[in-house]
Length: 518
Figure: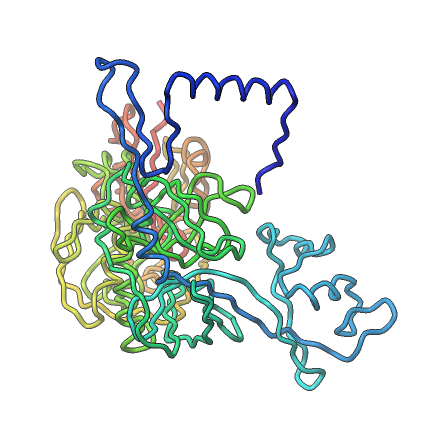
């Protein structure tokens, strides 16, 4: 909401004077946005600039965009007593939640001590009432947006718009309302497919986000703060924005606010190129950065949801990290690229293929892995059971491995292992490390060969973050086989350059850069 603007008599006289002068000079005021032109000050200043006309795009797209509102069931227990909430509890703000829904947050809704605070405007999920202590009450849960992708009522939206909803209601621009059912959702990509029983629905054509460039005009249509059929415009700010999520986002400066989630991002041909999904904000509202899911990625998910009601993804069983420039230099890589393997799942596809911690995966199938975040996307899109090749960088050379892709479980869990090692033989060195041999039983359990275990880390090694218990598997491109050989490797290092140590800690492996002390 914009602040109300007021004018003083002096200001009004100034405005009238300017308008009178403009009319007297014969200047015409623009009658419509489509006709606005920026005239150059002189012929030498350049050509006339014509601003884009969005009206035709909006007229065609608007009927295909819908408002989505959801309800949730909250538990009630007994009746209200003096000074008590409607659920019989002592929470004074339960009364407000009775009327305004479960997302109302009062001053007393602080985070649990020792736990991070919830996002602004969001309350922690409360424990449902024990069975038999009362019935649930249906209250408004939230609003969002969506759009038809088929004439028979299939609607694309965000998973977070419809997740945990008791009922879903879809409202069209002509006022008609339908109750929708969920066909399938995918939390990892934040995509959901819902359906209403209707025919001859207006649909949006699917575009190609691969043709987008920075600076292209784009539009968003949705229901910010419940204000349905709202249009905003802007430009593409970045392509393939990596935020650590499963998908690379389209970044724009289109105004997107709560309620826009699930709505379409349109190009100048009126085609959907993305689904508005997230904003980067410190206030909870739009601050100039919005993120959209590329529509081609979303449609791959939709195809599986429509067919199977769920999404299956490939898995090879590795944990990975980024390859920094210094690590790349130490490993002899021509440039910083690929995905650095920090651990390999025992018995998994990568383990069977021969992948080792410390390998850098450069290529999977026909896809080059330019950044570490490319690998989970490429593998995830590969059908389970597919046989593929994988190029890894190991000890200064490229190695090709054959791997069979497994299926990613619906809820994958990982447990860290902690080991205690008994010192056998120690040797101090110029890095500030005191190391011992790795016991045979620990090597067997960790499924490794050789290496040395850190008993004490001081000096440059301590400053680099190494701690007792770390296992050093390699230095630069040479495997570590024992204490004596490790001491020789350290003694022969070039003290003017940082050495890369392949370090295993619990079930994680990473390269640590250490410059030997002079």
